[in-house]
Image 1 (cartoon, rainbow, N blue to C red):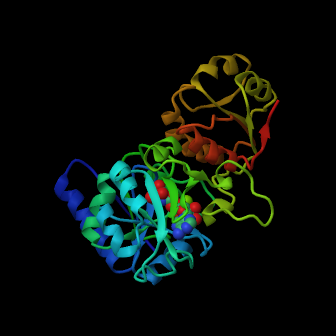
Image 2 (tube, rainbow, N blue to C red):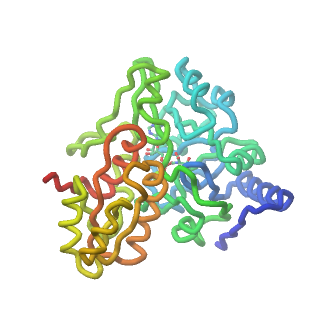
Length: 345
Ligand code: TXA
Ligand code: MG
């Protein structure tokens, strides 16, 4: 299949033509990758089981790993789910935005979309292009991240092309994604709320609205054999570059490890550590931004992990992030990418 690349620009009429072509593809059961404020998504009509199945095939994704449905407005959630009271509190505070809420699903959402589950994940993106696409298609859009299964999520349209060229109908390309990590996922039921995946909407922000929120063990810890995460997707090896990635606790230790790297090793580092690393002769230094600029770390992480594969580095070291606020999201993605390979001291 030929993948059409349609880049959004200044010309509003041309952009509208792109959205109307994309909506036609979605309405006829095809696949369109599109930008969101978190990462690029791979969209299909969420009411069409056959279209959802094409998503799994294009990504090479296990079909028990459910998809998020994207809506134009939180008011639409009641058409597809049975939203508990807490959904409306979260919607009021954080939608549109980088938050996904899991709730019991209505019949109209096919089980092909929810990986066989009786719940559905709902998100209302804030990115104007994502919103315009949903409006034009007039259906909820099921969309996982637009990467091949197991690779880092795409934060630029070129990442989507690298992974899915020839496997999907169209890519709507725009600037790089602002947040760079996938949405926060929270599961709601009678028993309260559980955080399944941390993101830009932080645990602290959720608790300011809901009170105490539980944290699924898979957010910070490696599960034992036989244990299952509440979000099936958190089970799979994820985000990992081909080369072994090791996390270290402080700059001094990062420098010691980096000194032992050969020409083909790389270190992911904060800007403040660059000079010392360079002075020690470290060749490949990939900068995450300033130590306290967590938003920059979030925005850059996936692109840097992809770069490691492109440059074919054979060994990578990176700093272990903190566990609060948005850092918890960076921590969650990078410890998974490292396969929990952490040097403590
Ligand atoms: O920011 C995002 O959320 C992006 C953009 C495109 O919206 N999407 C995204 O989708 O990250 P995906 O498929 O890559 O990740 C969705 C995660 C998976 O771990 C999946 O297992 C979980 O959400 N999930 C979806 N529906 C679920 C459900 N009903 N119950 C439990 N987990 C669910
Ligand atoms: Mg994904």
